[in-house]
Length: 551
Image 1: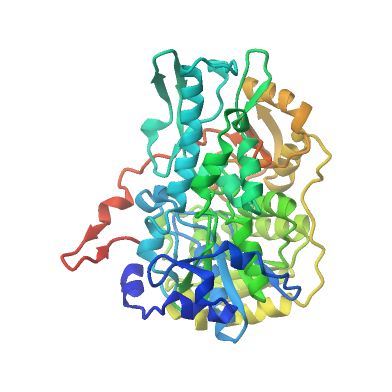
Image 2 (image 1 turned 180 degrees about the horizontal axis):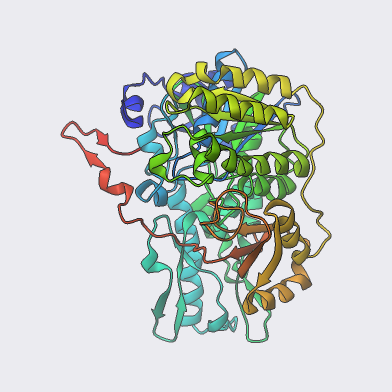
């Protein structure tokens, strides 16, 4: 079987200016990064008008497992199927982070014949956006320490500096570090770039002016009297925006099917808000009639944050939800080990179905949207398992569609595309999970009780103290839960659909410029580590200059 990279390198890619003609984008509207990658010029985007006919399809998934669910693959496959049917469609997804590329998950450009290309460049440096975000973040960190070194006129309390450096790499050695400077020592640490507030701001800002304003609003520290110090007090926002100016232009590439694809921004969904940039999504909605986008990890994290953070701030709203599931992953949630997943087991499938059932119920009931389940097919799936799963979903009153886009490309998602088009004709009652005017504690409780089915929340002493402080000025902000993606609970080993569990809130962080409060659960780290066998070990460069192992 060919690898994703072999398939990608063998594909006959078209020059990017030919690909975007279907969206009425001209050569002069692009800044080129080689033959197959480009950014949209700001002058072009400023002239675009609203497309009232456009539909936004949100792709999310059941809780992820080592078996893989294929959410990005399904997102691309659906967009390809719509495009192949003559629909003016595009796909809108996040940029891959080097953390998972070299860590456990590998690349994030889809798989098989449902990929965005060129996958090697997209998975590595791409157009340099993440480097720009890292540089802007670390410029602010350097300005803070320089200000203290130069006399500390703002009276920064060294023990209350909250802003951290970042790096787009899994490096557990940087989680906790000690800075030994001329005039002060302090303990701090690095976050991975995709968890940084600068990344969140980059993805939620709607213009360069908005970006600059939000960057200035970052709370970096406090004085001893507990008054806040912001990035604008250090006059940092202008230079930070200068570093991000080119990066802020959305990237456009193509799928292997020739569908235009927007890839821009990339916050993680477990420790950040998990959605591609607002500016890319809104641009796509103005250019295409059908925009297929995704929200990271399972619907408990990705879809909830997409709706309660991204949609709330931007005015975007999805017209329906496609929920991705696999029989292999359901059997894993039913108690099987990875080595047992290729064997038929209806009992494990039945037990594991509770995970998918809860995600379906949450998306339909709490967000008021039509839900279609996309069953991403594997060769090991048996007829009995497929029939049982589709019959069970049908009994719930929901539609499921068997998909084979990994192996068959656009053709393998055509039935899904037809089902989506039918669902888009149905009336929707889109709604947020909670209202703006309730307290932060009530928002956390609402997410924990309604989405995670917890029965209790426990705050650490420091988190409870921080909560009381934040309630005074920031109760209107939405909540970004940072927790394990592998469970509805804060315990990554609690698979299936746990209920009656306690959600442990370890830490609260204010993301003032991004416009939300982060609640960190359990032992989740904002700087991940590498696994025992990192994905980087498989990557090689051949004598012909071709990459191998970048999957």
